[in-house]
Image 1 (tube, helix red, strand yellow):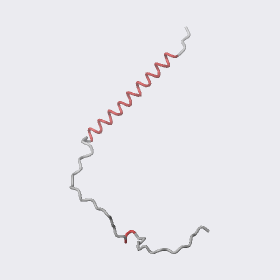
Image 2 (cartoon, rainbow, N blue to C red; image 1 turned 180 degrees about the vertical axis):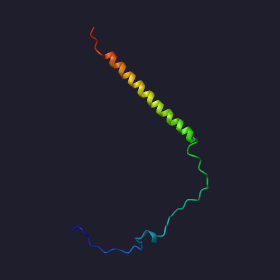
Image 3 (tube, rainbow, N blue to C red; image 1 turned 180 degrees about the horizontal axis):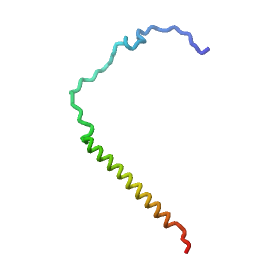
Image 4 (cartoon, rainbow, N blue to C red; image 1 turned 60 degrees about the horizontal axis):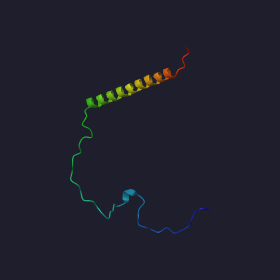
Length: 81
């Protein structure tokens, strides 16, 4: 029902990608080889120290948060004298 009947034109392009010839209108000039610097100057020891410091910082922030919430709850608690 939805199929259209038409004559296929031969474009000369093969369907198999292994048989295609690459073609380009513009080719960039080759660049000089520059060795890539290391992504990070940290050693495994420096990375471990940073992870430990980050974990300690998270623990300290949580500890202060718990103290702050407990202090607020104590201050807002009704006292019956």
